[in-house]
Image (cartoon, rainbow, N blue to C red; front, side, top):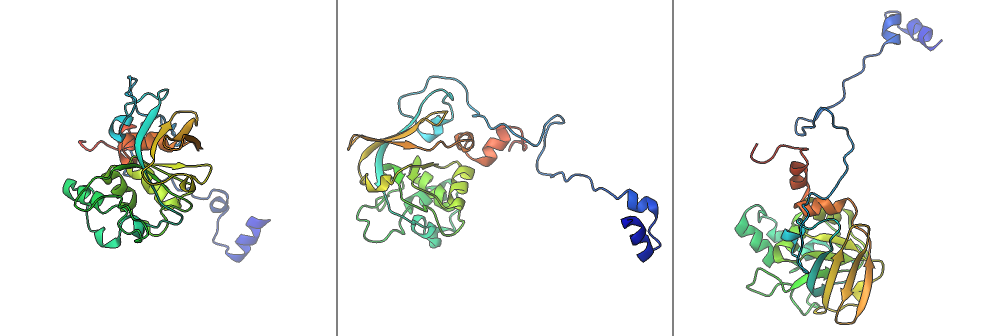
Length: 255
Protein backbone atom coordinates (compact mmCIF):
# COMPACT_ATOMS: atom_id res chain seq x y z
CA UNK A 1 0.00 0.00 0.00
CA UNK A 2 2.91 2.37 0.82
CA UNK A 3 4.43 1.81 -2.62
CA UNK A 4 1.14 2.48 -4.44
CA UNK A 5 0.68 5.66 -2.38
CA UNK A 6 4.12 6.93 -3.40
CA UNK A 7 3.38 6.18 -7.09
CA UNK A 8 0.13 8.09 -6.83
CA UNK A 9 2.07 11.14 -5.61
CA UNK A 10 4.87 10.69 -8.15
CA UNK A 11 3.85 8.40 -11.03
CA UNK A 12 7.42 8.49 -12.43
CA UNK A 13 8.60 6.22 -9.61
CA UNK A 14 8.87 2.73 -11.01
CA UNK A 15 8.16 -0.46 -9.09
CA UNK A 16 11.80 -1.44 -9.51
CA UNK A 17 13.04 1.82 -7.92
CA UNK A 18 10.82 1.34 -4.89
CA UNK A 19 11.67 -2.31 -4.45
CA UNK A 20 15.44 -2.02 -4.91
CA UNK A 21 16.88 1.07 -3.21
CA UNK A 22 20.53 1.87 -3.87
CA UNK A 23 22.82 0.79 -1.02
CA UNK A 24 26.03 2.77 -0.64
CA UNK A 25 29.24 0.73 -0.17
CA UNK A 26 30.71 0.75 3.33
CA UNK A 27 33.13 3.59 4.10
CA UNK A 28 36.81 2.68 3.97
CA UNK A 29 39.32 5.07 5.49
CA UNK A 30 42.36 5.80 3.28
CA UNK A 31 44.50 6.07 6.43
CA UNK A 32 43.87 2.63 7.94
CA UNK A 33 45.09 -0.54 6.26
CA UNK A 34 43.58 -3.80 7.44
CA UNK A 35 44.48 -7.30 6.24
CA UNK A 36 41.79 -8.90 3.99
CA UNK A 37 40.72 -11.25 6.78
CA UNK A 38 40.58 -8.64 9.55
CA UNK A 39 37.40 -7.61 11.28
CA UNK A 40 36.27 -4.36 12.88
CA UNK A 41 36.96 -5.78 16.34
CA UNK A 42 40.46 -5.68 17.76
CA UNK A 43 41.67 -7.68 20.71
CA UNK A 44 43.96 -5.25 22.50
CA UNK A 45 46.82 -7.27 23.92
CA UNK A 46 50.11 -6.02 25.37
CA UNK A 47 52.70 -5.76 22.62
CA UNK A 48 55.51 -7.08 24.75
CA UNK A 49 58.02 -9.87 24.83
CA UNK A 50 58.59 -12.17 27.75
CA UNK A 51 61.71 -11.37 29.72
CA UNK A 52 62.69 -10.90 33.32
CA UNK A 53 62.22 -7.35 34.57
CA UNK A 54 63.98 -5.47 37.37
CA UNK A 55 62.23 -4.68 40.61
CA UNK A 56 61.63 -1.09 39.54
CA UNK A 57 61.10 -0.11 35.93
CA UNK A 58 60.69 3.16 34.13
CA UNK A 59 58.09 3.88 31.48
CA UNK A 60 60.55 3.15 28.67
CA UNK A 61 61.28 -0.34 29.97
CA UNK A 62 57.73 -1.02 31.13
CA UNK A 63 56.74 -2.10 27.63
CA UNK A 64 59.21 -4.95 27.85
CA UNK A 65 57.56 -6.55 30.85
CA UNK A 66 55.54 -9.73 30.50
CA UNK A 67 51.76 -9.45 31.13
CA UNK A 68 52.20 -11.81 34.07
CA UNK A 69 55.00 -9.78 35.60
CA UNK A 70 54.54 -6.84 37.93
CA UNK A 71 55.20 -3.34 36.59
CA UNK A 72 56.44 -1.07 39.33
CA UNK A 73 56.96 2.67 39.57
CA UNK A 74 58.76 3.80 42.70
CA UNK A 75 59.56 7.26 43.97
CA UNK A 76 58.28 10.39 45.68
CA UNK A 77 54.67 11.60 45.58
CA UNK A 78 53.50 15.05 44.57
CA UNK A 79 50.03 15.67 45.97
CA UNK A 80 47.46 18.11 44.58
CA UNK A 81 43.76 18.64 45.25
CA UNK A 82 40.48 18.59 43.31
CA UNK A 83 39.76 20.17 39.93
CA UNK A 84 43.36 20.63 38.84
CA UNK A 85 42.83 22.07 35.37
CA UNK A 86 45.03 22.08 32.30
CA UNK A 87 46.03 25.73 32.85
CA UNK A 88 47.54 24.67 36.16
CA UNK A 89 49.20 21.63 34.63
CA UNK A 90 50.71 23.56 31.70
CA UNK A 91 49.92 27.29 31.28
CA UNK A 92 48.69 28.37 27.84
CA UNK A 93 51.77 30.51 27.17
CA UNK A 94 53.84 27.34 26.75
CA UNK A 95 51.55 25.62 24.25
CA UNK A 96 53.67 26.85 21.34
CA UNK A 97 56.31 24.30 22.38
CA UNK A 98 56.26 21.31 20.04
CA UNK A 99 56.51 17.93 21.84
CA UNK A 100 58.04 16.20 18.80
CA UNK A 101 61.05 18.53 19.05
CA UNK A 102 63.41 17.02 21.67
CA UNK A 103 64.58 20.39 23.01
CA UNK A 104 61.06 21.77 23.26
CA UNK A 105 59.86 18.50 24.81
CA UNK A 106 62.37 19.04 27.63
CA UNK A 107 61.20 22.62 28.04
CA UNK A 108 57.62 21.39 28.39
CA UNK A 109 58.75 19.25 31.30
CA UNK A 110 60.34 22.23 33.01
CA UNK A 111 56.98 24.05 33.01
CA UNK A 112 54.88 21.14 34.32
CA UNK A 113 52.43 22.21 37.06
CA UNK A 114 53.83 25.74 37.12
CA UNK A 115 50.27 27.08 36.99
CA UNK A 116 49.48 25.89 40.51
CA UNK A 117 48.66 28.63 43.03
CA UNK A 118 51.24 29.92 45.50
CA UNK A 119 49.68 27.78 48.24
CA UNK A 120 51.67 24.88 46.81
CA UNK A 121 55.00 25.58 48.51
CA UNK A 122 56.93 22.81 46.78
CA UNK A 123 57.54 23.18 43.07
CA UNK A 124 56.94 20.07 40.97
CA UNK A 125 60.04 20.96 38.95
CA UNK A 126 62.67 23.14 40.58
CA UNK A 127 63.54 26.41 38.77
CA UNK A 128 66.23 25.87 36.18
CA UNK A 129 65.60 22.12 36.02
CA UNK A 130 63.78 20.08 33.37
CA UNK A 131 63.14 16.95 35.44
CA UNK A 132 61.11 16.46 38.60
CA UNK A 133 62.00 14.62 41.80
CA UNK A 134 58.46 13.23 41.93
CA UNK A 135 57.58 10.06 40.03
CA UNK A 136 53.93 9.84 41.08
CA UNK A 137 51.33 12.62 40.98
CA UNK A 138 48.38 12.14 43.33
CA UNK A 139 45.20 14.14 42.78
CA UNK A 140 41.57 14.37 43.84
CA UNK A 141 38.43 14.62 41.74
CA UNK A 142 38.23 15.84 38.14
CA UNK A 143 41.97 15.89 37.52
CA UNK A 144 42.85 17.45 34.15
CA UNK A 145 39.65 19.43 33.61
CA UNK A 146 39.59 22.45 31.32
CA UNK A 147 40.86 22.53 27.76
CA UNK A 148 41.66 19.60 25.48
CA UNK A 149 45.40 20.37 25.23
CA UNK A 150 47.43 17.19 24.91
CA UNK A 151 50.39 19.11 26.33
CA UNK A 152 48.97 18.43 29.82
CA UNK A 153 49.91 14.73 30.04
CA UNK A 154 52.91 15.30 27.77
CA UNK A 155 54.54 17.83 30.11
CA UNK A 156 54.10 15.48 33.08
CA UNK A 157 55.79 12.67 31.19
CA UNK A 158 58.50 15.00 29.89
CA UNK A 159 59.25 16.02 33.46
CA UNK A 160 59.72 12.37 34.43
CA UNK A 161 56.41 11.47 36.07
CA UNK A 162 55.38 7.85 35.49
CA UNK A 163 51.81 7.75 36.80
CA UNK A 164 48.95 9.90 38.03
CA UNK A 165 46.70 8.49 40.75
CA UNK A 166 43.46 10.44 41.15
CA UNK A 167 39.95 9.89 42.44
CA UNK A 168 38.53 10.82 39.02
CA UNK A 169 39.62 12.41 35.74
CA UNK A 170 38.28 14.77 33.15
CA UNK A 171 37.61 12.50 30.18
CA UNK A 172 39.76 14.47 27.76
CA UNK A 173 42.83 14.28 30.03
CA UNK A 174 42.40 10.54 30.46
CA UNK A 175 42.12 10.07 26.69
CA UNK A 176 45.14 12.27 26.01
CA UNK A 177 47.20 10.39 28.60
CA UNK A 178 46.42 7.11 26.87
CA UNK A 179 46.82 8.51 23.34
CA UNK A 180 50.23 10.02 24.06
CA UNK A 181 51.44 7.15 26.27
CA UNK A 182 53.17 9.64 28.56
CA UNK A 183 51.73 8.69 31.97
CA UNK A 184 49.46 6.00 33.40
CA UNK A 185 46.16 7.60 34.57
CA UNK A 186 45.08 5.40 37.47
CA UNK A 187 41.85 5.63 39.48
CA UNK A 188 41.95 5.31 43.26
CA UNK A 189 38.98 3.87 45.13
CA UNK A 190 39.40 6.36 48.01
CA UNK A 191 40.62 9.93 48.39
CA UNK A 192 44.31 9.13 48.49
CA UNK A 193 45.08 12.84 48.12
CA UNK A 194 43.90 13.33 51.70
CA UNK A 195 46.04 10.51 53.10
CA UNK A 196 49.33 11.17 51.31
CA UNK A 197 51.66 14.14 51.52
CA UNK A 198 54.08 15.60 49.02
CA UNK A 199 57.43 13.89 49.56
CA UNK A 200 56.01 10.57 50.77
CA UNK A 201 57.82 7.57 49.31
CA UNK A 202 55.43 5.37 47.33
CA UNK A 203 55.22 2.51 44.87
CA UNK A 204 52.61 1.89 42.19
CA UNK A 205 52.32 -1.76 41.19
CA UNK A 206 50.41 -2.73 38.07
CA UNK A 207 49.48 -6.29 37.16
CA UNK A 208 47.15 -7.91 34.67
CA UNK A 209 43.81 -8.89 36.16
CA UNK A 210 43.25 -5.67 38.09
CA UNK A 211 45.68 -6.32 40.95
CA UNK A 212 46.94 -2.73 40.98
CA UNK A 213 47.92 -1.00 44.21
CA UNK A 214 49.52 2.14 45.55
CA UNK A 215 51.78 1.54 48.55
CA UNK A 216 52.73 4.53 50.70
CA UNK A 217 55.93 3.42 52.40
CA UNK A 218 56.03 6.55 54.56
CA UNK A 219 52.71 5.79 56.25
CA UNK A 220 52.67 2.03 55.69
CA UNK A 221 49.23 2.16 54.01
CA UNK A 222 48.19 0.37 50.83
CA UNK A 223 45.42 1.43 48.45
CA UNK A 224 43.70 -0.55 45.73
CA UNK A 225 43.60 1.00 42.25
CA UNK A 226 41.07 0.31 39.52
CA UNK A 227 42.32 -1.75 36.58
CA UNK A 228 43.58 0.25 33.60
CA UNK A 229 42.02 -2.29 31.22
CA UNK A 230 42.61 -2.15 27.46
CA UNK A 231 44.24 1.27 27.79
CA UNK A 232 47.29 -0.40 29.36
CA UNK A 233 48.71 -1.96 26.18
CA UNK A 234 48.34 1.36 24.34
CA UNK A 235 50.34 3.21 27.00
CA UNK A 236 52.88 0.37 27.11
CA UNK A 237 53.47 0.78 23.37
CA UNK A 238 54.12 4.51 23.73
CA UNK A 239 50.75 5.89 22.62
CA UNK A 240 47.95 5.25 20.17
CA UNK A 241 49.98 5.73 16.98
CA UNK A 242 52.84 3.54 18.17
CA UNK A 243 50.33 0.86 19.17
CA UNK A 244 48.51 1.08 15.82
CA UNK A 245 51.78 0.75 13.89
CA UNK A 246 52.89 -2.29 15.89
CA UNK A 247 49.47 -3.89 15.45
CA UNK A 248 49.52 -3.28 11.69
CA UNK A 249 46.52 -0.94 11.78
CA UNK A 250 48.47 1.85 10.05
CA UNK A 251 51.73 1.86 8.08
CA UNK A 252 54.96 2.14 10.01
CA UNK A 253 56.75 5.47 9.98
CA UNK A 254 59.40 4.02 7.63
CA UNK A 255 56.81 2.79 5.09
